[in-house]
Image (cartoon, rainbow, N blue to C red; front, side, top):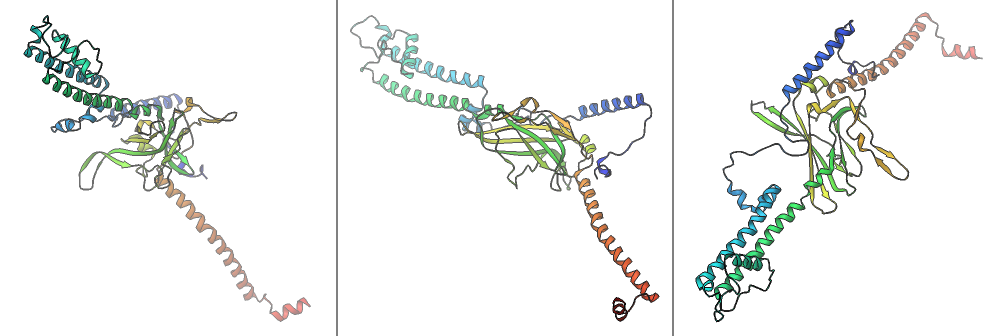
Length: 409
């Protein structure tokens, strides 16, 4: 039936008898198509590695970043975070070192270094360098024992308390920032892989958009779920232009298929039905369209319990019509083996080039034809039998019941 249905065959074009001319025309058409796609290629909204290609400009309320200074420090790049980490300790050590040296200078301790009868605020403090070292020893609670504070310096005791409290706060804040930055689960997303291409082909006699996801680690993603968005500009009926409009792509939310048990690579399928944004998209229209499909995989890291998110995207050039993914799972001696060499590989399969709407309408016409043809044939048989009976009655060939009984006797 598939071969007889014209939906499964493209529109026939003009016949070219010359093989060389046909080859040249095909190559020229391919070059023109590639050039056209290159001209129409737009900037990605989400990169293949999951980075969002959006930059915020003209943000005037920058004070909001300072009100959430902890998150701001965590979001900084590693080189900036390390610089802030080093500068936070260096500035506090230097600040209190200057104060310790200023106390010794005001008390006159630096002028009585060789006087054994003089009781300084800090023993063995003979300059700014020693004051700086005493500040480091105090804040880090090293306590080498060579430079110590005396009980004859009340201002030094108060400063010691202040530096101990402030030093503990700096340690808690900076170490907390570095711990959160190190334990961020975004690096876990590096081992969550998406197929390089998405495919459109038949699955259970329905056009489906499919892509593949996999986890390279032995530790699993708990409560994994998948979502997909169509990023495409649109214009409303009122004439409003919405750039990068986001539309949900159903990948099994109603049936629960969007919740994954990601032990081996899985193929995520989106059925192209009347609720799908690809309902009226054919192979030819797909080549001329301009959109981006963003896929988002979320779950909890089994080792830490923190939420992890991995993202990827597919442009129009990365959606292959009439392809299917190669199998990567095989049964070995007592276990299943996943071959990631075939993770991104696809192969061509017979697929209608029309849209899902046209395919559904063609199937509906075939079903309607079968539905009406069977009763009509039965009606024709009944009509033929009735016509024969009437003819016999006219010709007097039909005998009465008494005559039939006599004949039978």
